[in-house]
Amino acid sequence: MLAGWYAVLNLANDYRAFQEAVARTFTSTNLQLWFPDKDTDNYLYSTNAGYASGFNFHPFRLPQTLDELKTYIIRIHEKYQTYTDLSCLRWQLPVIALIASRHFRTPIIPAYWQANVCDPQQNGEEKPEEELNNLD
Image 1 (tube, rainbow, N blue to C red):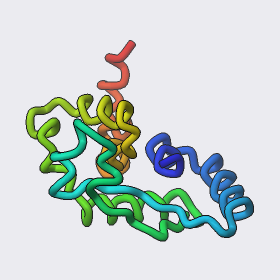
Image 2: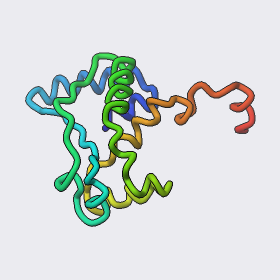
Image 3: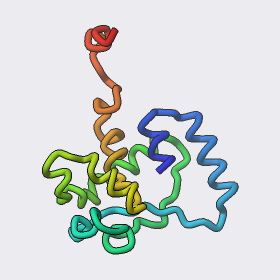
Image 4: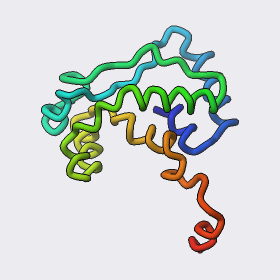
């Protein structure tokens, strides 16, 4: 998740230092990401849905560069879009899943940050200059 935020915030130098620290420090650690599945909606609001549903994507290896990580995130996001069936997203209340994740200690759905990598306009990149001038 932390590596994903380096991609969202476009922090290439910081990511490189993070990637090197992870490679050096966690030599025997298997990084993984949890993704919801079609059954997650049945558990998300009442228990830790990470234990009761979904699947883990592993091993998750950190690419050498931030651009490689962004490409990797886009591919994962396109392949594992199972989160779209969640009722809170269908009803346009995504904060409910975040609250449930916090309350029941379910991993946060990766789509919350992956969407910002897959659609750069969501995180402030590629905005026309006149639109940026109107923010003042």
